[in-house]
Amino acid sequence: MKAILYIGHGTRSKKGAVEIRAFIERVRARIDVPIQELSFLELTEPLIEEGFEKCVQQGATQIDVVPLFLLAAGHIKRDIPEALSPLIAKYPTIPVEIKNPFGVQEVILDGVAELIRDSAGEVDRADRLLIVGVGSSDPDVHVNFGKIADGIEERLGPERVSVCYFAATEPRLNEGLETISEGAEGRVIVVPYMLFTGLLLAELYKIVRSRQKEGQSILCTPALSNHTVIEDIVIERANGE
Image 1 (spheres, rainbow, N blue to C red):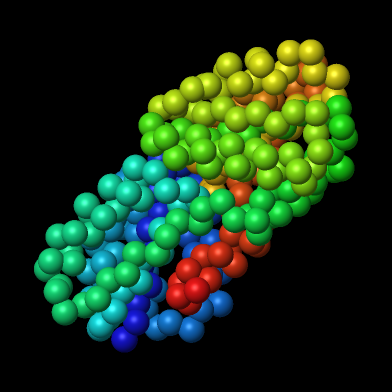
Image 2: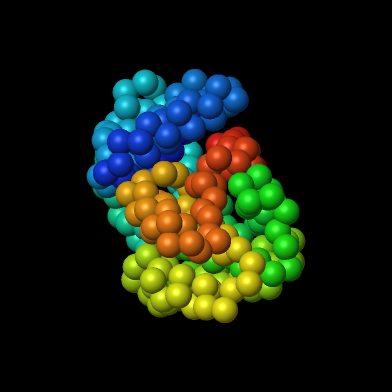
């Protein structure tokens, strides 16, 4: 019997945890697989081991692991395989397939562009966009965010699209905000490239509100899971596509 084990990052944000559980409930309702469990890499229970064991206890004879991660970096390349390795060894007769993260897909970039329009209306030539990633020391992250920035620029045509990060690599958020804001004649639209609400996104909203109070024309779009394209991609992964 097939099982699906979804793996999220985990968050200290209660709102973020509620959001991801609601997201998975919507996904579950659209997939005809009897065993579907949600687990987390860290910070939120159940952790991966418990989620895996729940699948086994319900009679799983095959487990497809669906990571809820946008890009391949340390968590995908190292942390999740390391967490699954002892479980795979413990149950050698149960095949386990780890699906790919979402990656940079045209359909995702289309969804991000729609999300920006829904939040900010039509983007003018004078507007500037700042894409904010969580950050990673993995060099592939810079390459992927370059593709993301180029794709969004092609779709919306703002004056400038820049990228910055919360941690682990440069430029950091404060530098990114200062650079994109300098000399801006239109709006600054901040685009958090994150799946779900969490403490980092809450911090970003707070910074944007502070700048709004100071008179800057700046706004922030919601997390990407607010667009149905993300739900559709998870379902594709779960269905083996």
